[in-house]
Image 1: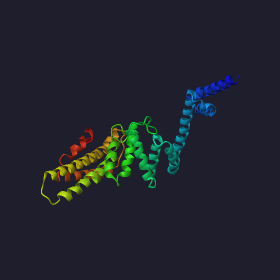
Image 2: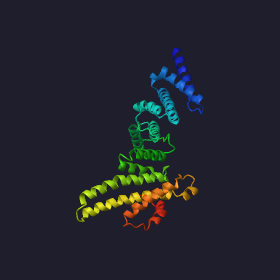
Image 3: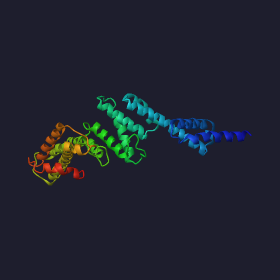
Image 4: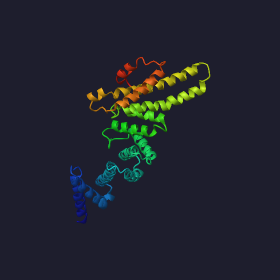
Length: 302
């Protein structure tokens, strides 16, 4: 009789859990959680299919509560609290993409607000989140709408953080941020930052190395090869600036409501930099520049 009652109580408790675990309302899910937690307390030692299922439900439900708390702190723009809540979560789940991403967004917004205290820590979270995407380990893009949106933002943030200290890596990140289906695919500012990072990074490094090695020497195959590498980086920067100019054309924003809008001053500044760079690599001639700007968006990124 005792055994039968035990079995019946177990079945009844599991039935409460099962009837509510997929309920659309928070009340039903909460009933399922209470039943699952009680089931684990009473029968978790059985280690059967019921015990495993209810245990997993409790884990996921409690993870959801912690995620909601984390996201609420971020939405309230309390970035310090966001980090306080997120750090212990990452100690137990270092590959939790949701937590890494919210921390990345919070750290980025905190930096944009003028507070650099969380920058180094944020860079680590951004890198970890990107690595998870590139390793194919992210099954749900939350808190982003898609993996393309996630990759776009995370690489944009990485480029922004590294644009001064490591422009070569920043350029690589900005290039990933503007890939197809990214929300920044048509963002003139990101292309402008890409161009600046190329010039500050590989173009500048190669130019300095070229001057040290060949500044006072006669032409040679090695010298010509490095000169071509410098020109190649210059052309990449020209392409990025040309895209920024084309995308910041006010006529485009009139026909594409999803197009970010930029001031005429921004476009004029970028055009001036583009023109100077273009002419410096073409014997002070701007022939073909207008055609480049008109056609650049129809071409793949170099």
